[in-house]
Each structure stands twice: as C-alpha cells, then as structure tokens.
Image (cartoon, rainbow, N blue to C red; front, top):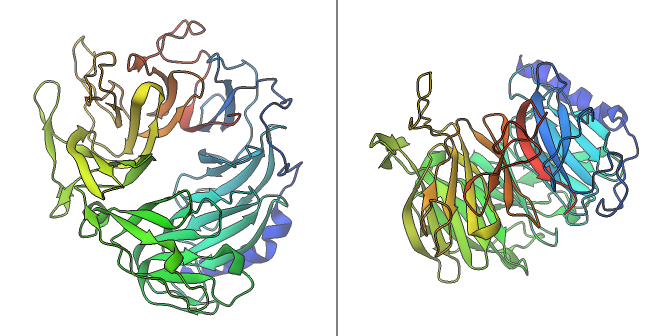
Length: 473
C-alpha cells in the first residue's frame, strides 16, 4: 500500500469516524458490580478469542468464581480477532482491540457495555496498537498508534475516544508513539516512542525525545498540549507515586536497541505547560534488563532479557542441564533507588505481562521466548518450557518452589494474558492460545471439579485465546 493511499484512508477516517461508530447503549456512567447482567453471572471473566475454528471469534464470558463456561452463551462480537483488553476504572466498559498486526487486519477498536454484555460502539483504527489507557473518570480513552499515517509528518499519533458518546474526538501527533501511561489524577499522560522523535505540526515544534508529556486539559485549547522530555533510554513503562509528583520510568535499554536498562525518577511537577518544558529526569539506576515492571509498596519487580552486542546474553541451565538463553527478574527498592536482588533466571523473550497473584506468587509472561518442545510422543519426564514464569516472593516454600525460587510450568506458547482472581487463590493465564487456571497455594494447575478433562481447564471453552480480564472486582 502506498503512502498516498494510506494518507487518503486516514483523511477519510478522520471525516467519517464520528458517524461510523455503531452505538448501542454505551453505558459510560455506571459500574457493573452488583447489577443485573444479561448472562446472570456476577463474577465474570472476559476472555478474548482471536479465532476458534468451529466457534465464532469474540469475547467469551466465564464464571470466575466457579470456573464454569455456560454452554450456549454466545460471545460478544469485537472484530475478527479480538486480543488486548482494558477494563475502565468504573468497570462499566471493557475496551478490546482486534488485529493480527498484518496488512489484512481489521484493526477494530470496540467498546463493550459490561452490563448489557454487548458491543456498544466500534470503529477501525488506522494501524496497530498495543497500548491504550483510560482516564480515571472513565470518560476518555487514549490509544497509541505508532504507524498511523500523518500528512506532512512521520507516522504515529495518539487517538482520543470519548467513551460516553462512543466517538473519536481527535488525535495528538506523536511520531512512533508506542506506550502510554496515565497519572492517577489523569492530569498527565506519558507517551513513549520507539525512536528519537521530533514532533511538529498542530502548533508543536519540539526537541527530539523518546518521551513526551501530554496535558489532557490543554487538548483543543492550547496550540501544543505536548512537552518533550529528554534523558530517557527507550522507556517502556512508568509508575506514578500516589500524589503524582514523581514518575519512576522504566528504561528498556539494549533489549529495545538502547544503551542501558534502568529505573529513572522524573519530577512531574517540573513541567511547565506554557513554556513547553520539563526539568531533567533524575539519575538512572542501572539494572540488567527491564521491559515490564510491577510495584508493591516501595518494591519494584522488573523483568526483561539482558542483551549484549545485539543478542541475548544471560545463559542458564534447563532441568536436564541444557544451556539456554534466559530472562532475568530484578527486585528493586524505589526508596533507595537500588537493586535488592538480581540474577533471578526466568524465561527469555520480550516480557510484557506481569501480575501478583494470591499467596505472594508473581506471574511473569513473555512472547517469542526460547521454548523446549519434546518430540512426540511425549514421555514422562520430558522437559517442556514456554513463556510463563512464576516467582515465589514468600520466605516459605510453595508447592515445589522454594523461597525466592522460580517455576517455569510445562506449557508451550506465548503468555499473552494474566489475571489474578480476587477473593480466590487462583490466577487465569492465557498461554499458547489456551486458558489455564493456576492454584497459588501449590503453583500448579488447579483441580477443577467442573471439568472432566482436568487439570486446570474450563469445560467446553475452546478457542485461540489472547487476553483475560475480570470485570466485576
């Protein structure tokens, strides 16, 4: 497809976007917990299914309290291959993106009404996204589209969507924008790019940077609502302190074609929207690798794959002594800006999923990892390795995992969805297109009495699953 054709498509989209939305009971002003749902299930997990063969693609609903899929319950339509999902803070809606990241992808963005369990609005984006965030009041979504064509500028912009009206409300040009992170009060939006980007147009002529601060209140009011921030090294994630005065930025470094992975504090109060300037970020504390992070209190868990000379550089041994490439988990103290523990071997690949389950069990998911697939027929004792790691953060043993130890479950495939189930000691994990249920008390697949094909599965739920989210708690 030529650049001219892409520009024509974009122009058409921008004119037709508000009118092309298909609305049906958008429901942006209320939460779903404790209300009457169409399915009658009050502890629900939504599971996106890209393609199912004999069953339709869509967002499936299961009972996350009993691990039961009501047979005959039709999925919610959400494009040809729904994948990544985000639940709004008020839990009234679930946002889903459908794409295979190919030229033939539909790139459909859907707004699902969680009470009615229907697709309330949907429209096509001009490119692929793997990052979208929602304002704390659940009224606005921001979507990073790194390859979206822009007339007279390098590709990439942030799409704004009004979730109450179910309508697109414009765009903010940020070339190659890949990741978005929003402050707790919604007054600041951090936009991270893959390449050193110069922003111009829409009233902006800014210094090249890997990070930009977007001021939502200035959008449509001031000529340029964007501020560049220099001094970061391929940032991928940010954690805001509760008062939003500081953002701890995770720099991916060599794994993302940069120089050094690190954690770097950034004073959010140093930004002057009128002068379009921000202060210099604080000193970067180096770590071996970091592409995803989770914060609990002052402890930050960082996962990534160390790189040197353009290739993975951390080797480890498998269960049978094979030399393998590994990723690394680092435990970091934000209070002292120092590494507490490093060198914890996990699967390699690009880590972009992390969640703390019950009983102190940290689940870490990656894609494109080095897998071990035994030749058929699989024999007892054959080693199997995929892209999921479980770290025991307790000081006591859990199942076969010692304190501070790591379990790599014997399942193959990318780990694309991780969802701890509140008020239970289980975690739903989507790996290799299948949904697995892990018991946090033993770090093994749960015994589900409702599934005769135990362990760890839901009877009758078959598909090529991508993501999982709970919507009621």
